[in-house]
Length: 241
Image 1: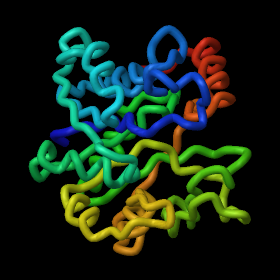
Image 2: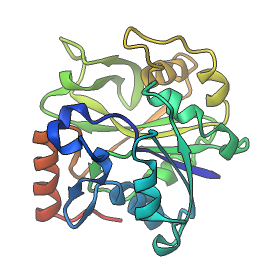
Image 3: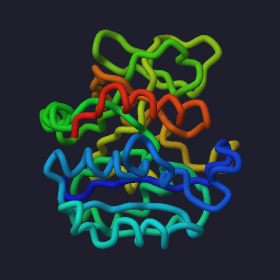
């Protein structure tokens, strides 16, 4: 797997005044800026080549904070997403860096306890498949929800009124090289974005989707409430890097 991607774009509008002058991924979670969490997950799994994708407004802040990656035992490359076009569009910016290899994608506002190493080992069993992370949650209707048959993913619904399971799709994805050709065929959704759920459902229809469940805590830190919750989780039980 030649490239690992951290997606740290978005306006952070749900964070109110906190993100008027900074990117949400630079807000603190525990002892570090939020973006340190996915970065430390990747370097803790032995990753050395990392691409960070963010918007135009605060890319300079990421570069000033993280630099070349030398202080984090990795080599960082930066790519600008000119507009908020969705997760799939942001991933499409990584095509040049993947060079025909698989890509591991982390959403920058996902905070979770587990190490990535067992997840990568499981995904290596079928390198031509896509893989998604799942977490059992009490309020699945807030998320993309996986319909499961045993350990097989049958479909994914975005924020369903009547969820078919209580397993939310978390911001950890692994894709084979053909994902970039697939992204080029996507049509914008009603939100005028290229949806990562459309990508995932494509692989499900092909019978090429695997999943792994997180044992420890998981949350996204994209709202004021979930940012507070993330800090509480990390203070009580530091994540495994």
